[in-house]
Length: 473
Image (cartoon, rainbow, N blue to C red):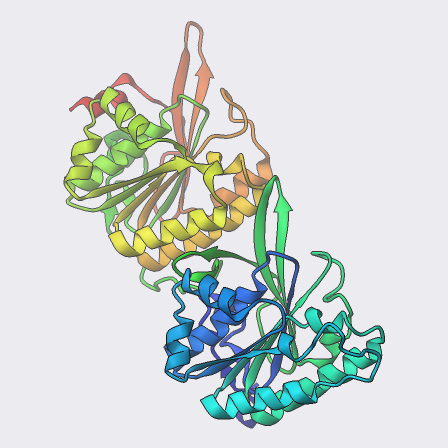
């Protein structure tokens, strides 16, 4: 839509979410945020007001039906939102709605929200608020046996908010992750917009997603989008295709750290290439990763080296066994090592930590050894989502990247062909290491199966002992 038909947006300021909404929430309208327990509804409401104050200088009013004001202040302060300070400055006002709705409140039509609406109007005018959050509708609607009363009173509140010219967020509980929008089912028909937050258990680990179900008259991105709750940044929606990669395609090449491999790839990797190296255990993937990092140091470049399958000490020991002083590389300031086990946290949090390290360290190269560790804790499609999200960041920053992966088979390259081809399709270079059984011994061989934009050797080449001896120079 263009011209006079364009609906004005108000940015939420929530990290990554405005990319999903294509600019923010429709201004002057009411948005329902529905979710199960632990999905992040209250935080969404708090952050919507907080980002309005810090980024747009827009005061806000928070209407609470359940949590005490003291608890909201304390919980928000732990995420860096100084609500008490904003109250003192006249930028934030609370309306404690639970005080208006006592235990003996009459039901079935005898009770209306007139007093509550009047208190909200007073707080909005007193602060000059442009944003209002109500958390949570279920606390009051459970008191009404007649659904028609719920619908009537909700319409009354929504109309009052619209008349005030504020943009509002109203939260509500839903009993199931994929069954209905809310407990009562009337809220989506009364309010302009509907957002669903989910907290789904998959393979023994919780994953949060956000989905826009309805944006009345406004375009938005469809589908579920992963998000995490970070102690530093609050809600962070993981981007998949939000970052625009550079139009520039580098013609410069960098060394892999292994001369034979450089020759097979037509002179090394392009500077902005994403390289995937697959192979069974023991074929040399970690050695190749360390040589790649050492080549960065030799070129005076920074390299971020990440392992999801061991500790920092184990990686130092492995490097030393091949004559590579990883500790010295780290001490030089050109190499930063991130280590830990994939099971420690979610893929979304791993992604966030990597993105933050890339922003802070500004590496020219990145190594992840190995993606297979993540497969122990996530479904294949989730792993692909992680790679897509990371790839968007890497291409945006033009970082030369080496990702290693062990197929399902330990000694042979057995794997699900769809997953293998999908991962390879997201990369620029695909290198395969494997074992070949000869008359008297088992040999390691290497083949470059894909190298976009450059000539490469498609034939198997033995990985000679000198490939390993390069590490001792």
